Image (spheres, rainbow over the protein chains, first blue to last red):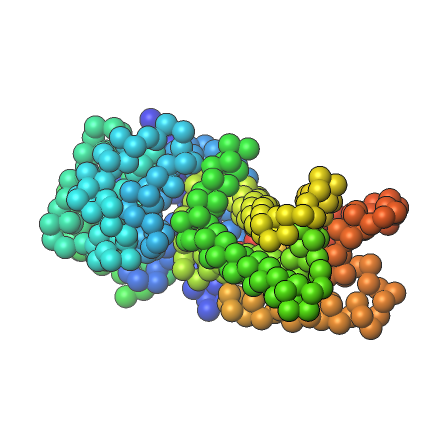
Length: 241
Length: 250
């Protein structure tokens, strides 16, 4: 199985002393990788580097073998992203927002736009402008925009933010379905341990800018009663609690 | 190139949907109509023929070049960069399969398209107004002069637009960029008056370069010199703007 994501010595430090240090990781194609860590651990920094929004101080990220730093267009071609907040153009309707995003992908047509809106439960609101949407609806629209091009990799930063219980369940089902049926790889950041445990097949624990460990969920749950225990254990082993 | 085309289509579509073009069109119509009514009023009350149908678009151009066109281009450029950074929507384009150079070029291309559309609209409008109110003085030669004047007026406004793009990538707030652009514009204009030896290097002094093109005797060397200065300035400003844009972290 090929590598969807490769981090090599990824480092990015901010002036306030926070950031990420010497991150090394490989994610296989088809994995649902959960990037678990508390607020401020460096999850979003990693995802921003992965999507070219910021540059690392050193190290490299490769998506499907292409470096984000030196071969951005090829690296990002097969990736869909939702980073930090789900933004959209507030003066365009939901459908028009996706239509604009579709211009970057020749294969995406109106039918696919409808399909994505249907999948995230926004088809009823396709002619409404996102300025009137709730946080959860904006999040759904952001996810629809990320999956529009049928990407092989979906990079989702806190995708369950703002979703109600029903929305969370729908999203979890959608992620699992895409991974099973279409072989989509997921790289999901979250600070919600329970959701990561239920959704992800492999989990990496990041704490104070360092990746403490990465293992398959089934192995973790075979050795620990819950992911929460594993997380505490990993952090303690790192001598930080 | 494929990424650039997609990004350009997205940028022009956003311009259109934000109704900036419609606002520019309405303001242009109002300004042209006020100008034409003033001309008619002078004709009727004083019995003087101020301008004919061929000269009216040139009067409009001389006014718009120093007011409406730079104002619009400042609004559009500031909105395209500062507006998107502050609304956090810039990342929507930057996370798509298009390089930063592609995104930057598409934005600059959309500004160029906006300027061209604005010039074309005012050209048609002022020609129509000129013919409607003073049909007796219409002539093909006059129309050709007007066409040339409007076509070549694109370059200085575009170079000024690139200057605003640089400012928009230096300063964070859109309003600050607007005021800074006004100060730079006024400063360049004043510097051109007081230090005439440096006038050739100030973009505001080139805004009326169309006059060289439609003069009785065309000074080809002066036209070439000014064109090269503007192209040189434009190239440097584009490079500076891209350098700043490429280093932005979101």
